[in-house]
Length: 247
Image (cartoon, rainbow, N blue to C red):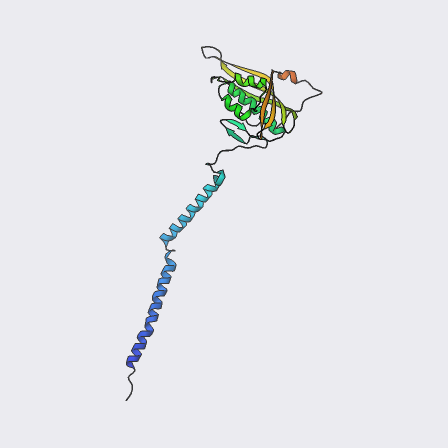
């Protein structure tokens, strides 16, 4: 009697077809997973997110970032100083001729500002004056105390700066300045403009890591005409310093 293999054939066919179907399903799922992120909507979102990230990084780099970000304390620095500002007053000078020249000019301008009631002389003393000022400088500081602010305008700028002597501890700097001013001269509000040429010699000492004023000598003049003649023994003047103007 012949054996009936029909059931076995059908069973084998059924079993063999199942892996194929599963493989096809898995392949279809894998293909769908592989291509789903590249579909147009998701691709657009991915590109937009990438561009937004690039824009944020560019803006952060342009603004300085890190310690130099706008949130950090503002600083200013030149070759010879000043290296910082507080209450409108500069400080932080190099321990050389250029630093002394710049410090002397800024001391003169700061005291001039206090004389117009536009700076607190106590703050000026704390930041720019030595702990043991001379009698002459002490008097200058006292005269500038409690000055009322006025609408008068006086700008003191250096014409020449001469460093007479300098060591690691002391320096003497003569500053020839011109002060251009405009002030009210009567009740009608009329104003007059004037200029004053003067020479101020500032004695500096190196104290607490900076140049501080300890002595002060002031004299009116000379006028420009008085110094334009040839001089066989001219004093060397400094150039390129005192670039910060205190108004």
